[in-house]
Length: 249
Ligand SMILES: [Zn+2]
Image 1: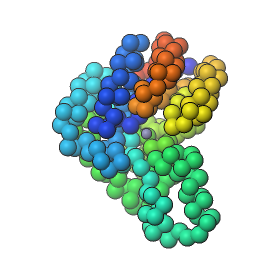
Image 2: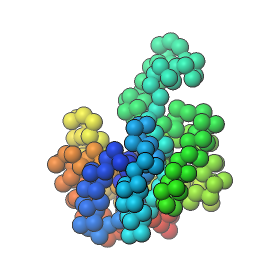
Image 3: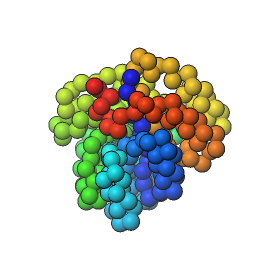
Image 4: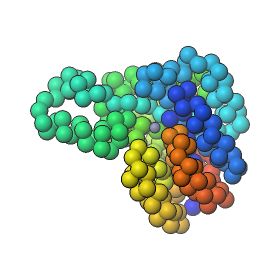
């Protein structure tokens, strides 16, 4: 089955690690889709880095697809979340902590915004990427976490690719398909090792399902993950498609 490769969190904040991930993929003849964050954590605005934008245009011309990946790639802090949602008490705090800290490390931006705010971030994000000269070929929510309304909006806007943890979607055509995702977690040593184990096991799902390999810039800081990813890319290379949409065919 087809396999699609992405590099997450493409931002001036991670420019060195993004370049090493691109180099690694190129060693196997692979041009991953790049998930571009317009203003990573509110401190790395793409619009203010013309050199990085020029590099992205060059990569696009070389065949890398560009996907919009949230806007800030960060959920609100508990204090911000509590004031917006008027949340009080232990239960709401525990729910917030579980969704943001345990599951996503505080990165699940689209799980924590109202529809109006989400639309505004989509508008601003699309503007930043277009102003940078990039054509947007898909949308991926940070931490693959998006409320159901996002799919409808992406369909209205003509997006033909998005994904979450378990499925890939063509919002424009209103179809989706189950797909396995292989990615690594490097936040703690135990997560790192369990994600390595998971990816080794999940390889076997490739016979049944279209697969995705997601490379995070932080992975490049760990020698173990660099070599795991290299072996994953070598294993995948004959079936790699450059466009997420090709996972449907
Ligand atoms: Zn991300």
